Amino acid sequence: MSGQRPQYGESTGGEVPVCPRHPDRPSYVRCQRCGRPACPECQRPAAVGVHCVDCVREAARTRPAVRTSLGGRASAGSPMLVTWGLIGVNAAVYVLQWLGQAAGLSLTRMFAYAPALTAPEPWRMLTSGFLHSMANPLHLLLNMYMLYLFGRMLEPALGRGRFLTLFLLSVLGGSLGVLLLAHPMSLVVGASGGIFGLFGALFVLQRHLGQSITPIAVLIGVNVVFGFVVPGIAWQAHLGGLATGALVALAFTAVRRDRRDPGQRGPGRR
Image 1 (cartoon, rainbow, N blue to C red):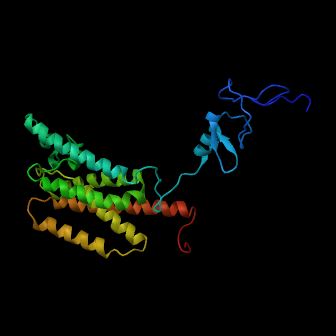
Image 2: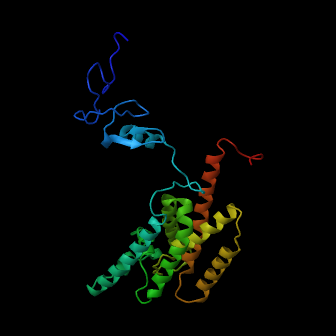
Image 3: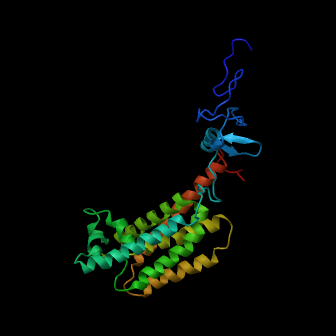
């Protein structure tokens, strides 16, 4: 049509169409979305024909996020990336505890939590959850084994971000339980608060999904009683982590209901 300017890369007369991203490369293959020429390096296979790399990136940006069954953001790659990462961090810190002791430096004294230290050093409420008893390696092994078992169930269902949030808040909740229920000078270490948070979350989520809660209820009951019977165990952290994990899971389910039923409240919602 007279007066109409050709698009960039479009052949005019005897000119050879070139790739917009690589003007030195002739290309007679066009993107099925934008119609621009695309050289072999910029072509991406599509259901029909090819798309250029720019259109593929734009589609990826505008595509809705894939959600897990419980509303978390699904991620590519390992479904247990956060779980393995937490296990690795705990193991590495345990090694550092031994190396520090060999060098005359006690990480336990520096980062363990006691209620009396809450105001001057509040970060101990979190750092204590990554330290373990050096006198009893079984403390670390049992906690990491439980983290593996429950991470395998919860992380793929919640998504990485929510699972990490659940664990860290449960560690803080365990320290809060110690703050409220233990002696001010009680020094505690261990990931048990985070582990019990996973217990509480799984209980809530299985009940929410209509699954049997008997196995997890029995497991919680046995471990809670165990904490009261065996000396040297911070049962206060267990209760704090358990309650926190349950509350966080309730919040996750509430957000999921809001996303599925926007604007609906009260009776009549299915």
